[in-house]
Figure 1 (cartoon, rainbow, N blue to C red):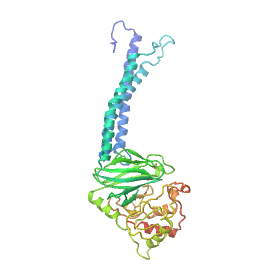
Figure 2: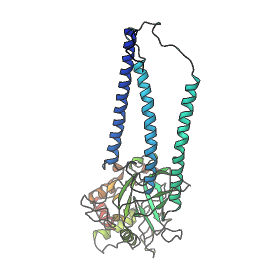
Figure 3: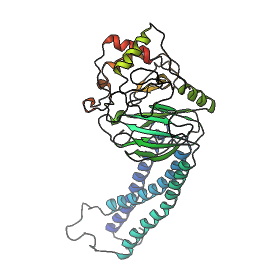
Figure 4: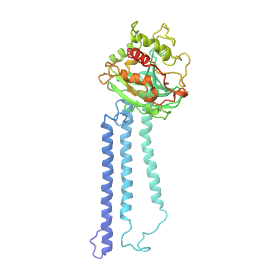
Length: 410
Ligand code: CUA
């Protein structure tokens, strides 16, 4: 900076120089405030458990890999942001019009073109992007390898508007377990999810465990997820897929090796048979009259007859398969899940322990009843276009016995 104490400096020049200093200080202060603001926001997002859909709080290998790419890229991008904004603010303040500026006399020298500068701000960013491409491509490969070398595999199907999970544990091409809303995995193991869709494009996203991957009809996409600790990790469909896109959530429940074995043994066991003469037994009859043309309970065909097998039928279509997606959530062991209807509504009252291999607690009978009474009120679904659950116009008696039957399906 030019010294202001040179003898023959005019008072006008003095004013310009101090104005230049002031501009620099203002630019620096504004820059610091902006950086502090983003750091504050970032901390808030990462630490607030009330906002589970954050990518800034990874809980497993693949998500950690993404996060360790995000950090250096964010720092480089942040430095560029601060440099560019500081230069912009400095220029704005330093060369603003002064009160005593005379028109046509005190204008800056008008220039056009500056080759060295233009080369610099073309080549600089190009080199920076080329440099950032290296860790980017490395991370993409690492995530691909995670999916390739996974310990186990689960098929995920997006449907309007819920997620289905299929486990083929003996690799015979037929799933032994078909469940919905909640994907259960053993802790520590890398799980490859094979993502498909039965109707339109959805997108599978459990931010604590990995990035997003689209579910595209006719295609299979692979993604690795892994959870370091037991727990429940929330997710959300992130591709607009129709009326209830915002109500299309999912969860991953990570269980210890022993708990996972308990869960798996329960899923492959025969469904609970209601005792004759109870409300649940009446509910079972209503279920096979009104629900089984879309929903499946393992071990029964859609008319309520025993299939002789306790395993799900992967091609289950009910009697008249009216749905666009071709199926509705498999309801076997329904109460082993935490929520229903696109993972939106709790199956248990607040006293429940949904994190257990087989959850315990008081079934949320009023919520299930509300759903059966008119699902469209809780989740808009265009049922007239064969999408989602229609209003079956059930009587209060039918609703009561259906709830009694469904809530004993542990
Ligand atoms: Cu499925 Cu959005």
